Length: 226
Image 1 (spheres, rainbow, N blue to C red):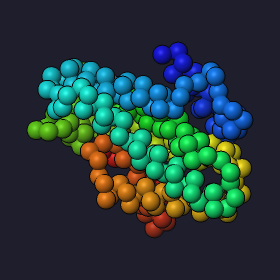
Image 2 (tube, one colour; image 1 turned 180 degrees about the vertical axis):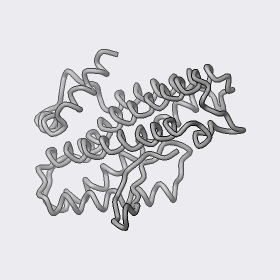
Image 3 (cartoon, rainbow, N blue to C red; image 1 turned 60 degrees about the vertical axis):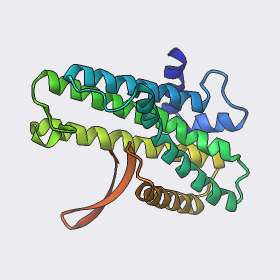
């Protein structure tokens, strides 16, 4: 568990520096990216089970199926990294595709895991206070007090935004990418991820980019959606 925390800390405190050291030969102090996201998915799985146990809700699936559902979002992140890698290779980068995927997995393993654990913690607090209502198939956040719904929105948007910002910083440093080609890679990567999410809508956490109107001004927001 200590190595999980070290890995998350090293990535979060400097994704660019993390990626540059990775490119020079990797880290002995941090976990393999696949192991890292697997541990994160395990933590989310047990967090889900703990919340269900607290509320008396019967588990909708087996523990292994729950683990796979917790691991599935990282497939979307890997696809984002692969698309961006292809674009950046076209503009001259010599990095391996596995390094690009590793950076987005480290970002997902850090911020997706944190976001989901915080949502579970909020659910446990709200349930303990008696302000979270359980419907036929899900918890009815919209019937809870306003602060619960607002907290859920912030917890879905905040870590999602951090995931994207830190993943992009790591990929930019890894590929030593110039502004124009990198911006194109980001746009194509996000568009492809959104398209794949609609074509293959796994029943799990999905990263969504949406443009909303604030006083008639279009504002892009990034959030996670189930």
